[in-house]
Image (cartoon, each protein chain N blue to C red):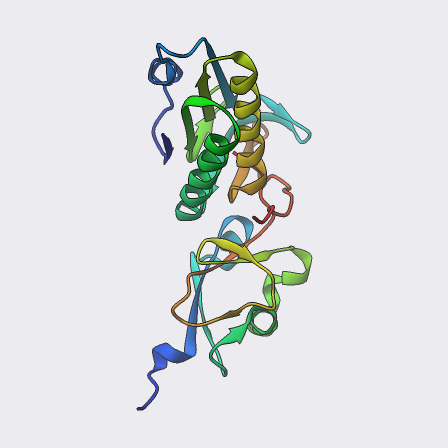
Length: 89
Length: 141
């Protein structure tokens, strides 16, 4: 069966300073492999958005609303968010 | 009861909701916007949250509290949007038979909200500048 475009993109939620820097609530990232590790996804983000200076702003990934380490693999069906440092309620 | 809201938090209403005739102790914590920070005089704070994830984490914290302390009622409400100095951004209330459980459970609740909930603050200074508050990396499960 032919793969649809939807199988090759990830939608990533943005918050706080990252949302403001990119002037968007979310990003659409094309991926070459599915599933893809969060480690690879980080590299993709840094290549696609060098202006974001990702290395200057620490962040972790949440997958389906749970913080995950970067060995975890994700698919377009997962809810992915980039979580910059939090400042509490 | 847990929730995240854009509405004003009414502490007297929460106090009333947390009351329980079988409880001899009631502890209520409120966190509000200070008029100053390390950057200077503050006019207000904009609160942003990953709301769906905050709701999940609040449910987990509520469950952990019910498993570890003898608590009758637990309430945690977080507010997002722009808040002026003095307005309540977070409230945690606990009622229990005895005070030790109420104090400890309330302390655990607010500590874990601070450490685990994805919430970001942007301070609006009286000088006119606005800056995101430097945060800490979120604590996983």
